[in-house]
Image (cartoon, rainbow, N blue to C red; front, side):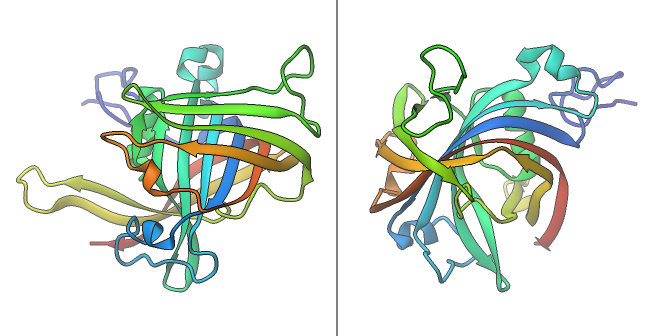
Amino acid sequence: MTRGFFYPKTATGASSLIPPPPWHYSGDLLTIEYRTNPDRVRELLPEPLELTEEDPGAVALIWADWQSCSYSRDELLDPVRSQYKEAFVVVRCRYQGTTYSRCVYIWVDKDFAIARGIHQGYPKKFGSIHMTRPHPYGPAPKLEAGARFGATLAAADRRLAQAVVTLREPSDTNGFVNGHPMAHHRQLPSITGDGQALDELIESGAKSFEAGQAWTGEADLELFSAPTEELARLAVREPIAAYFRQVGVVWDGGKVLENR
């Protein structure tokens, strides 16, 4: 008998790239919302997902600096297994009259985060992600009016995005684009090359959520073209707002909406 939630499966299961859920996350989120051409959002929504009627071109580009762990929390005492960063792009969509958020692009800097994405339906790829961290002492920005945060994203040696966010005031929200349950596809091509061995449309979201005070402000965001990336197709037409918030999240599965 072999054990392990994910590959590689071994006699003990200790080599598994990821442990079973629930997964616990603590992180800093830097969110930039803007409007793009709605046609560019539509082309990223496979059937049966549809554009939202309200603000269909709204996009959220989010940088996140995470510490994550399983139920045991052992990873927090071995930080190479818990700390990682990611940058991801979220749009909204409709399915059978319900509004969902959907991650259409995402880059991470650790292999265990990619494995979790395969399970959750996130289209994760390797990238280089950096963002300014707040700190109450020294020159790092504090969570206060006028504080400035930088963020960069690169993949395959190409810069894909860079931003500077300036906080203005406390906010009641952390934006609206990434504020719904996620509608994702879990897909695995058949080994015969004919169709999909796994093809599920699933819903998932936080089992529990807690957060500190959100701050809002303005962002200076630039997107860049690259040979194997398409983020720049979601070009900025109009800025909406930027946000900073520290959060805690627990993820523990989802439900199947369609199994095709």
